[in-house]
Image (cartoon, rainbow, N blue to C red):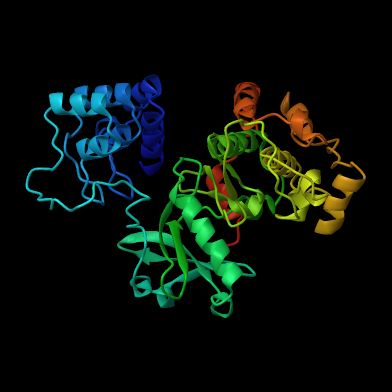
Amino acid sequence: MERVLAKVHWAVRNDDVEGLKRLLDEEEEGPALIDGADYDKRTPLHVAASNNSYTAAQLLLSAGAARDPLDRWNNTPLANAQELGDKPMVKLLKQYGARAVAPGHSRKASDPMLSPPKSCDWIITDPREIDLQRSTLIGKGSFGEIRQTTWRGTTVAVKTIRPSLSKDREVVKDFIKEVELLVKLRHPNIVQFLAAAITREPLMLVTEYLPGGDLHALIQKGPLPADLAVTFALDIARGMAYLHGGPNVVIHRDLKPRNLIIDENNELKVGDFGLSTLIKVTNLHDVYKLTGETGSYRYMAPEVFLRENYNTKVDVFSFGMILYEMFEGEKPFDGEDAYEAAYCVARENRRPVFGSKTYYPDGMKELITKCWSEFAVKRPSFDAIIPKIEEIMEKTSHRDRHCFRYLLQRIPRPCE
């Protein structure tokens, strides 16, 4: 239900009434979705009231949505609308009998009516809330570890910084930057941030736990079935289109299979924003003055390797490389080390060779070729990529469909 609820919240946020109607009518959980709450206890009506989604709010209220649910910050939808100064929304909610303070709940005059991230209620003031001694290691990197554990009754993933690096000002600065970025993100294809410990050691970042492992582990046993690869491609593109949507543009800068995580419904979410950059822009075609070799060489766009100015199209390039890897079952330039692979791309303008025996659905090779174009301006945006993948999906044969549970069994379990 969590996956469907995320779609409902996304439709409400965009005031997509037709999409919302479809979800409520077609899904078995339809009646429960109307008041379905997320990790922060925010219902669809909370989301509507916080995002000026007037028509979505009308639909929810007419469908019998609860008028005065409380989120984790003890705010009702009307309290959110009043804080935003959205007079039409306030009027609508009051017409349906909504209150700024829920029955049976008292609010002091000094209590804030704020939605995240202003309230900073995501801060874990006492790291002992998370028992790392009873956690399971699921990932390890040069800066720390990722562990599975339980926090406030929910299974979560916890990213920790190595104790030896916790005094490094630059490492801590990057960690805080990642947290501040994640607080702002909420999308069905983005790993959901929950909380963080940033005031006391150990520094920890808490996100939802996704049990399916990462895309890298799945590809290790060979190429994916074409229909599965296309489905995954659409998941990635939707998540990235959200990140690239203005005026607050997020450039991931390290898009690769290891950072694409599979959830309990076997769908992909984009994660690991350690190198991401949030930029406010007025023109989405702006070239940002960001340079330097940031990210993983094998999936790196040539302009990054060459330390030239770049924009969101660096993520599109990485996406093209990931598409190739899903279909071929091997990394781009698998015979070269990562740096040499990036050198081949940037200095020699070479690209991986499509396998003569690899099945690609009609239009997929063309899409990949456009995504990894030498010229960033020729690479399509993710908004343009999504309908193209949907078109390919409609044509993709299901004759080679595999049981996804079988595919998941191909992934070695962490630390076994």
